[in-house]
Structures are given as C-alpha cells and as structure tokens.
Image 1 (cartoon, rainbow, N blue to C red):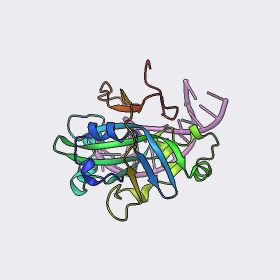
Image 2 (tube, chains in turn purple, yellow, red):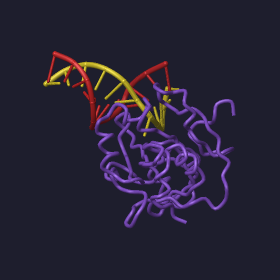
Image 3 (cartoon, rainbow, N blue to C red):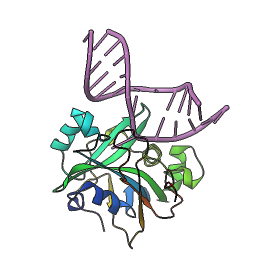
Image 4 (cartoon, protein in one colour):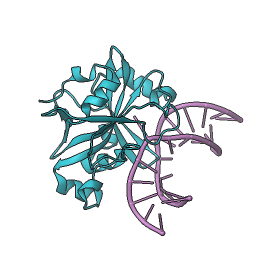
Length: 191
DNA sequence: GTTTGGATTACT
DNA sequence: GTAATCCAAACA
C-alpha cells in the first residue's frame, strides 16, 4: 500500500522511524529504506530550518510529503521528505536503501558494480535513482508523484543511533537503522 | 563583491 | 587523511 499524505502529518521522529522498512519507488527502480534521519524545524540546530530562511519558507509553502532536495558539499543531492505534524514540523533525510528493482540502471548511474555500493549513503541513493535539482519541490505523495513509498509488508526491527556528519545537536539519537542490514551507510556505533 | 561553512564520496 | 566543488547566507 502506498503511503499517503497523512503518514507525514505526524511528528518527524515517528515518520523517520516508520519509514525504515518501507519501499521507495522511483521510475523503474525501487529499494527498501534501511536508514533515515529526523530533523525538526524547532530546537534542532543541525536542521536547515535553524539557519536557512529559505528552508523555513519551504516548510511554510509546501504540504507534508513534499520533496526537499538540496546540494551538499557542492556535489551531492540529498533527498528529504517534508513532515508537518501536530508534534512539530521537520524533515526525514533518506540515507540508504537496499536495492530491489532496476539494479542495472542503478549500476549504470553509479558506475559501481557491488549492490552494497549503490545506495549506501544519502548522496549515493539520489545518484542511483536519478533524483536531483529538478525534484526539489516535488512530492512523495499524491497524483503524479515521480516517487513514492509503499508500506512494509511485515514489521521491521529498527535501531537508533546518533546522526552522521553533523556538528550541532550531534548527541540526539535521531538516526534510524534497519537491524542487521548490510546496506546502511555507516553501522551503528557499538552494534 | 567576497568569504565561509557544510545532513558526502572516493581515492591514497 | 583529504581533494573535489557550489550554493545560501552573512558581511562589507
């Protein structure tokens, strides 16, 4: 079952946790989400909304389920889902997938052979799926969506850990990982 | 107009 | 360990 907008009208941590195990579909490609991070629009110094007026404007102008795609380090597009819930607004960063369909296309786009190298990082998965600047402001929900999520068929064991690559609010355990997955970007500390 | 700081990746 | 590479924001 396709995830509807209401899924993203809850708090960002719940959305990030429950997206682990869902399937992301984009064109002929798909993969199971094995790693996400939550960013909240208030009180989270690592979130773009904390230091970018343009990000706050994005939250104000778009509905839950919108795609927030931005260029990081001048080189890699990172894909987020906008969350707007009663418990607060925020984003879920998509950090890693276990590739399922369209693996040949992913290999071609990535220039890598090993399946584990295709989507094991936020910059890698956007390359593998062909997500980029033109997808900023698009949507993961609703008619005409270029990409969407499908609900997990069975319950998923989810672990939490601190987020990767940030300096501020770095102690918050807001990274969510599928337990024992070989396809995450960085293994859980001590696990 | 110039400077600065990143939610990364791949290669040595 | 570190080069590659660019935008938004802040400052002048």
